[in-house]
Image 1 (cartoon, helix red, strand yellow):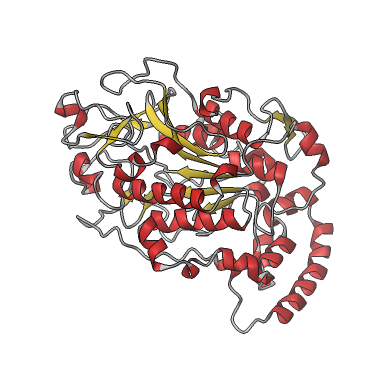
Image 2: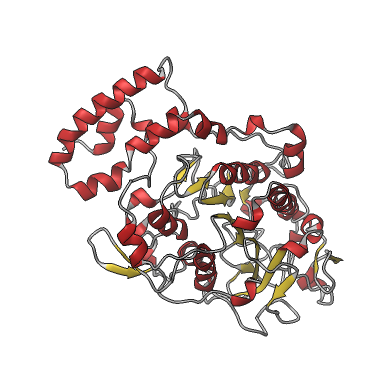
Length: 467
C-alpha cells in the first residue's frame, strides 16, 4: 500500500502540513489535567542542547585552580552578591530579572537520556527515547493553537544529537500531531558530529527562518490554493475510510490549520524577520542564536503559546556545547571558545536582548522564559582543553511571568562539581513550567489508545522561583 506521505506529495500540497494542529474539544482534557489560571500565558524555552559549561557562564569559581576555572574570571552583576563569568556581561546587567538555579542535577552523563529527560521531565531508558511527549507537546495538547499559530513551535527545531542523529522533538504517546512545528523542517546535514569545522568560523550568519510550509507554491494564488484544498479534502475523505483514523491523524496532523497559516497575512508576517530594524537585529546579534531569539519574541508577540529556541549541533560550528575538544572538533581551549560570538558570549548577548526587549514591549510579565541544557560540564578541564559531560551539577535560569528576579537558587561546592544545597532535576524544571501555566502535574492525559498518563510522574515546582 502506498504511504500517506507519498499521497501527500502526489496531491502537491503536502508541504503545507503543520503537525499538532488538531481542533478537538478541549473541555475533557482541561478537566483531566486540572488546568487553572497561571501566571504565564506563553513560554519561551531556550533549549541549548549539548551541555552548556556552567563554570564558564553562571557559576564561576574564581578561587579554584586554573585546571578548573580556566583563564577566565568573574564579574559583578547588578545584584549585590551575584557574580557571573566574564563571558556574560549583558546578562550580568539584568540579573534583577533572573532567578538563577545553580544546582540543576541528575544522575546521567548520556546526551540522549539527559536530553529526553530535560525535554519531557521524564526519566527514560534507551528504548524510550521517542515515547515521551515534550513539555511543549503537553502544552499544545491542553491549550492548542492561538491566534492562528501552532501550539508548539521550534525555532528552527533541527538539533539532532547522535551519532546517529536522533530527532527528540516528539509528541510521544500523545501522537506526532503534537510534536513541534519546526521552522527549519528537516536539517540538510543532521549528523553534525562528522567532519571538522573551520578553525575560527564567523558568528555572523543570516538565517532564513521563514517556514517553507508558509511559502506559496510557484504561481499558486490563494484562490487556486483553496481549490486544491477542496480537491484534497475530497480525495482524503476516501483515504480516511481506508486508514485507521488515529493513524491518519498522527501522520497527517491538521491540514486545515496549515492552510489557515498560509492564507493569513497577519500570521505569515509574524515569521518575517525582515520587518525588524537593523538596530534591533544588532541588539540581539546578527548570529543564528540572535535571530532565533528575535523570532521567538515575534511569535509570542503574535500570540504563540510555547516557543522553543533550539541551538545545539550546527554544521557551521560543530557540536556547539559538547566541547570535549577531541581532535575532530578543532576547537581552541574552552576559555577561549566561550568568548566567541557563536558560543557563550553570543548566548549572553541574545538572551539579554530577548529579556530586555520583552520587558520593553510589555510581554515579559505574562511570558515565562527558561534557559535549559541537559547537563553542565566537568569542573576539571581535560587534557585537550575541553570539558566533558557532567550531570551532577549545572546552571539554568528563569525570567518573566511571576519569577522572583535578583536571586540565586542553590549553591554548588567550591569546584562547581556537586550541589551543597538541594539539587533540582529536569522533572522539577518541567513541574515549574507547568505550574507557571496553571497545569496541575497531578492531572492525567490519555495516550493514543486512551490509556491515562500523568502530566508528570515525579518532580515538584520550585517554589523559590516565584515571588
